[in-house]
Amino acid sequence: MACWMYEGLLMFGVVFIAGYLFSTLSQTRNALDNRHPLQAFVFVVFGIYFVWFWAKGQTLAMKTWHIRIVDVQGKPLSQQRALLRYLYSWMWFLPPLAATWLLDMPAAKGAVLSLGWVAIWAILARFHPERQFWHDAWSGTRLITQVPPVKVKAQKPARSPGSRAL
Image (cartoon, rainbow, N blue to C red; front, side, top):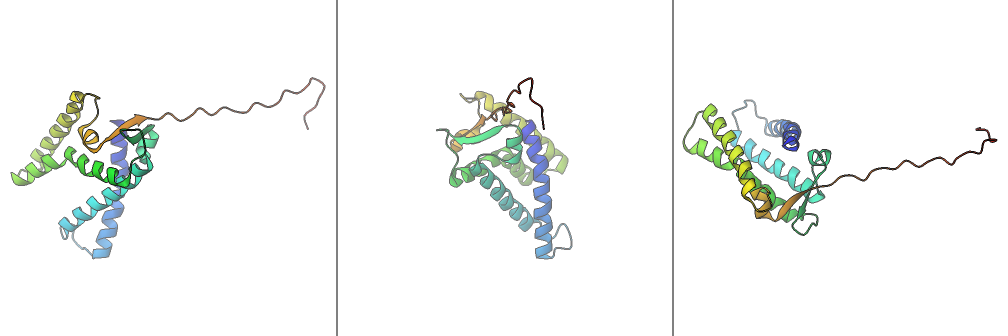
């Protein structure tokens, strides 16, 4: 969960830059103008970010927490599988966002619904036989822990008692 929170912090920067780029290129003057195209643009930018890094094995947050993503055979992800995982990972947020929109809920109720759904979705991972998240199971991926190798310092050769250091 800490990795997820750190990823969210990093995504804030990605959203900021994407929003700035979009508003500059589209010359948007008001934040409510072009709202839906901006949301679509951010969706695509998120997709590029995650698919790129997952195909490489890990995002910056995953690297910090020593987590790596692989397919079920333990091999690195293809871009197609990373894209599939990205689309399935929207199950964390899409159902409550769609319900909030369809039922025309106020923002506060939508936020409570979203937090409740995320909690339920996380608990559902306990019911998977391998205790992995369902979007990973559906996309044929899994998260593994990858501890970096311990660096051994080279020892200096021992000096004889009569020698002097220069």
